[in-house]
Length: 401
Image (cartoon, rainbow, N blue to C red; front, side):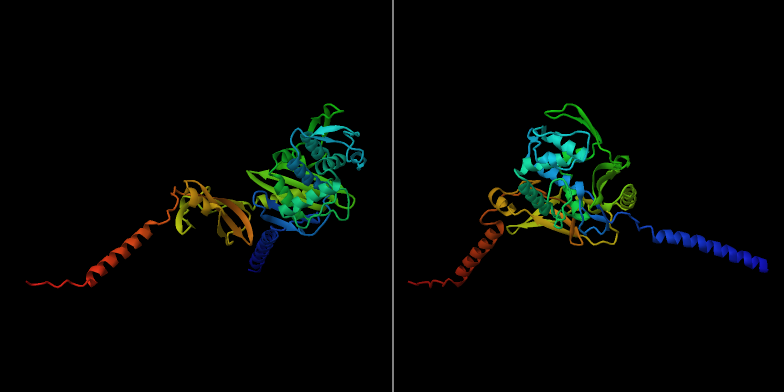
């Protein structure tokens, strides 16, 4: 009997230990032990934050700065515009030995973009700044103005290449927003995803260049940019893609090879949480928009569906934002079917997650000065006055002869 009791106790203890192991795993499943001091992972399309570690603390971006340099260049230069290496630009600290530029050497815009991203060329980035801004102060101002427009409000640039300056800083969250903006520039993203290429300048032909970064080994890698200075340590922007889902990972104040492991952890964490959320299907939308006191039937261009990593207990706000000029357009020309009337936005926690176009469900003639209701009311009043007149009209007395 005692032996049976002991066996039962041992079995219970074993089950307890096994259970505690699985419970422990579940409790800590959402935790990521990153080496990097600052990190963030966001959804590329909406900017929704999936993971954050010290993401709003400022630090040095190093060569990840060059993404902003590239965007400003693409904003102001055309494909056939040229960048010339100046005496000042070639004095910048060299970041590679694969291709060395000389004063007066010329590259076209797209070659400059590709070369800057593959080699992280500090001298070329400086030459781009001189060419676009006219001088470095003006170019840096353009960089900072664009950063503020994007919403990177805790960022300040002092140069186009990220070489150390105590006043040249950003945050992981700001850098994620800047990278999200860069997705609007296909040539920049393509350059960020290029491992090697052959380039030609006015003085050098068919030179082979390659990116030494290890990020290309990640099976989900789509595009990226590394950076390093003694003060910043290793920095990394990596855009990763899996099953049509795209995330932006940012690491600041990290180190090799630990930041490669950090990216794997972020990918595993983020992709496992992304799911599709549908609030309203296109066919179920039934809302009217009041324009000049008339109710206009509307429809939406797509389902209110979006990718999110948020849980199921989240409250969403649907906001309709009419176009400012829609009332005037309706008055002058009426409304045509499928005409854009505004946008439908989905918000949560004071952040916009998704938006789609609000369209007219059918055509409407421009409103007349007097509507049908006005005619009905006016007619009723006239009829009432006529009745009152006949009722109150004094009767004429008959005269007898």
